[in-house]
Image (tube, rainbow, N blue to C red; front, side, top):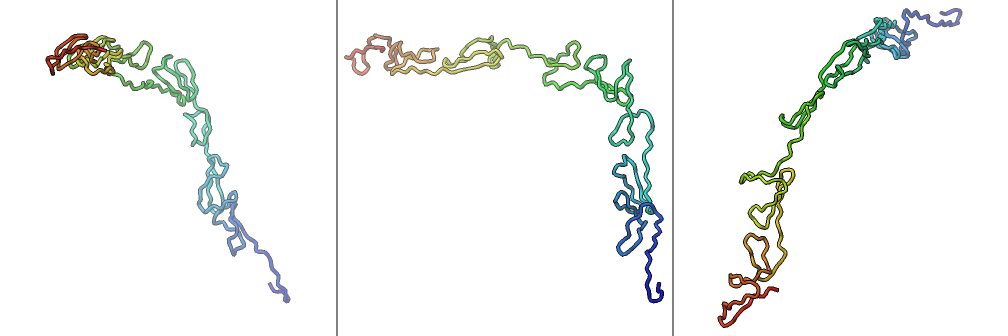
Length: 250
């Protein structure tokens, strides 16, 4: 106002009809109620949010006012606690066959290990204990007294070695030659056949081969022109009939 050349100024009186106004916008002097300021955070009109320590409390911004609601929790026990459940409660215990079990307790039925039971909020659920998979044939499976799951029996020990080519069964420990005198086979305790060849290490210029014997005999005699002569035996030379030869084994 102007009074005799003087200018008088008064602060604008702001009327704020809401509980959580926002600060005055740029260029303005009065707070605005087209939003809410709650715990230092600006909220838009109609925004629904939860306070930092609300514990499932839900708030809404309406015309500059913040209204919060907390869930109503029924008294007493509940089926079971859940991390997403806002209400804290005590799960019901289970009364089963004269005994009381806490929520989540696991126990066996009738004292055996074949059935497993669990207490879930006052209700008992029982199920058969799963058995492991067996890798033995059906005739080797055995269910013992008091056992829930079958086990594999050890296969019977083999009585010997059965050869499919000729149908001959050799007892465990039997040694034989399959046809080659330089090869010997033995029947193992597990029913398998193990064979090994014999290496002849003795050498001589005129070896004597004896039928059925693996290695040549260098002490039995001499071989001359396809004939075998014993030690100290004399015989005519095939090259000169006037010459007489003798077999000398050294």
